[in-house]
Image 1 (cartoon, rainbow, N blue to C red):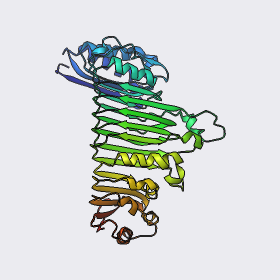
Image 2: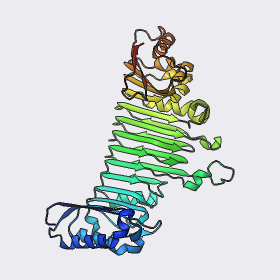
Image 3: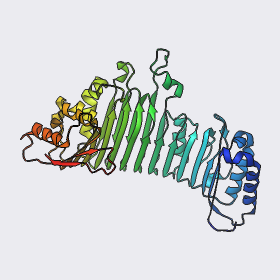
Image 4: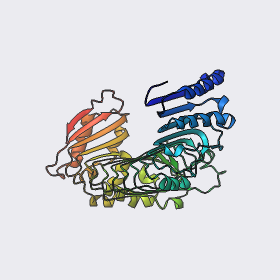
Length: 432
């Protein structure tokens, strides 16, 4: 009770807390009343108890936070069940926090009237806030903010963030599509037009940006971050068109993995493009643009003509400075027979990795055209999940060597074939 720099942590779930809720409340009040040291550095209260929802037992949560603030707490982590759509009020004096984390199970935090002069870390999880207002508030009222985490946010459809101090931004599990809309998206009963999600991120100090496990109808993403070094857009689902523009001259690592579920009318897919500018510092790029596994079509057939003929080549051209490149085979298939492929030269590419579901699919695709663009390649790696016809790795390497012939001059590179299910990941090594 008298220790300095105390970190207080209390977690209660519904199963364990409900029978003893009053005793837990009594303990918490007693602890905060008897704690003699003037300072608690970190205060974490996760109280997920159905008997103590915030809108029913609100005073107990407010009282706990108020008492923690009296002890000059610097980092506050609150997780409480709030009835969906209800407001969660933060007490006066909270503006001096250095770190704030809220998990409200759908509640609405009343933040926009507050100004945090010293706040460096803000994490919002399972809250309901309008994206545009959230971005405007963070840009003007959290000027010292360095780390921002947005997880499972309801209302994040549009977002505009401009902050000169922000260094790391994570947007995770934020779907712009309501579950009901997703269920009826492509049925004849669905008559609502696709929604646009517009995200602008203009941060001069931003070094890491991650957007993962999000779903969008039409996505418009504009990133202008001259100091950005690590960009990940991973495991996202796109149901309509997309326009991604990246300006980050110091970018070193780029990861882009999206499942493209184009089932909307072709007219709505006229703006599918990814544009990256000034990526001369790029060291590693991971790109996986896949159609659903249930589809028998490849990207070249399944995607709209606008993206297949122009946008894909334009995007691959923008990552031509990468030293290490990972692509799924659907991209290589779409590019191999493209007339503009010959205009792309990967002068710095040393390591190329291609992933494919079945190793036998490699027999039907002429990857040689793509390899001719890689004049400095040292290693080529194939990763596969299955091998239905039991194609041997030696046969694959010989086949590739035959297709390349003497057209690559004296260029030779190591070829490696790896089964993703191989726990030891030994693979097979050959030379082309």
